[in-house]
Length: 591
Image (cartoon, rainbow, N blue to C red; front, side, top):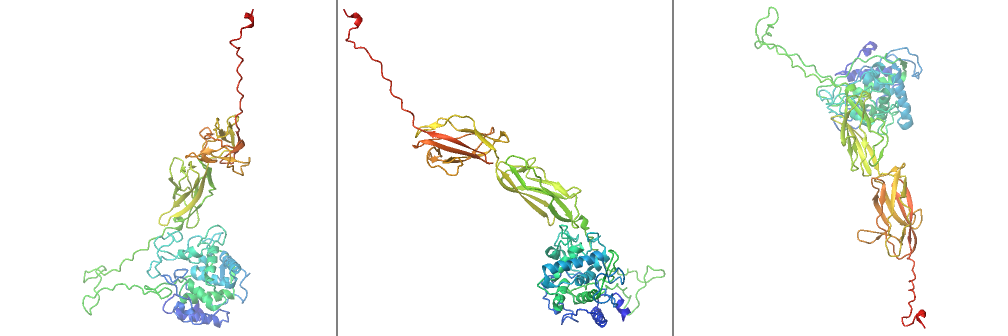
């Protein structure tokens, strides 16, 4: 029996019976194996364990019901019960788990225990699924960061013996832009990874080919729907949600029990590779594991009813009919997927800082993005289109609102300098790259009004007017920024009661609006090319006294100008000189 159970099993018409025998044998070896939930044993229906069947072609399975390895564990207990850690790198190769893979499973268990303690996720369950899905990442062939040295891809889910799942990721993860494939050591299909992907190794990426990311994603997926994996029924539901096949559940359960009895760490890359993948049926119901019938080779037609087949004329001595022997149809080859290293994966900010500039000036920052392939490495020669959207008048150097730049060897593409328009306000710069499912990044940018840090009158003349009269001299000021003339700076003029401009004044001098009505605040004033501004005429009402006019600029510079309203001094009329009496005879002429 032991020799029989050590043979690699293929999933076929007898798989269920053999797997049941394996579970029975394991139980007979006094292993503390968790039993299947009531009602699931011997059932080919994945809902037998109580899991509701999801809608859709994949039945909601994390792997899309992709093929898996049906190898069963050996019957020899790897070590005494309770010795599942700290064992030396020795013993059965099948009991050993590569170091990085084992570390990822245990890290996932610790993380989930912190974020979802009621789930009670055991790392041995992750190990069992990892064994069945990818043979522990193909025997632990991962780099120092836990990423597989080459992508682990399932077959195209094209409906030919497998579920039909049309492309959902533009080939970003699986290199196939026509159909989806299961990806990575835990064999997630791209659509499931999009929802459950994790960044467990802290490198800023959610990579299904990284065992740390994939193990944590699998752990969270298994814990979904408030499952308690310490309960047999919930554990069965969790496993069936991964692949809706009762045979799959039995296989995972077998390895789960095996790893619970003990395992040990072995060096990465030295694990045993599985040898027996499951195969689908030609007309599958998602979750079934029947083996498809082999396509029979065409037999030569007999020359007459009841006669022997006609000899083959192509062989020596052959004769008879010259009709060629029918040949089986040539199968259409599956297209070779584009390697993930050449597939567009993501578009990210390459360090662009805040985009803010004064009207008419050049932005200090330039928009920069980085393209990565499906494995996270920089991707060169990718065209990236940058577009300015908004009404500030901002354009790229050269006057264009849209430019295309290709990424360099480091995967980055940097847009030309941005030239701020004359209108203050918000606008956006959008970067778009990729075809099919383009990746887009949007940056917010701001144009601020021109600024001045100082403003002063151009002369020192006293500004005086009589009540009800107009001020004879105009108010002229000049704005500067860093001692240079500040052209196009917005200025606000307000009649105020105090020098800080806290209280507006509704009496005294005023401007006039278009209808000739009094106006004591003017906005929309701007300095000319020389930074100067000549205010409109100012009028006095009947109130006498000294009044204040406050001018403020964009940027905070201000000045307070005094306006005096007083009546003109009255001048006494000049007395005329005395005129001698004409009748009076001059003394000189008197006798």
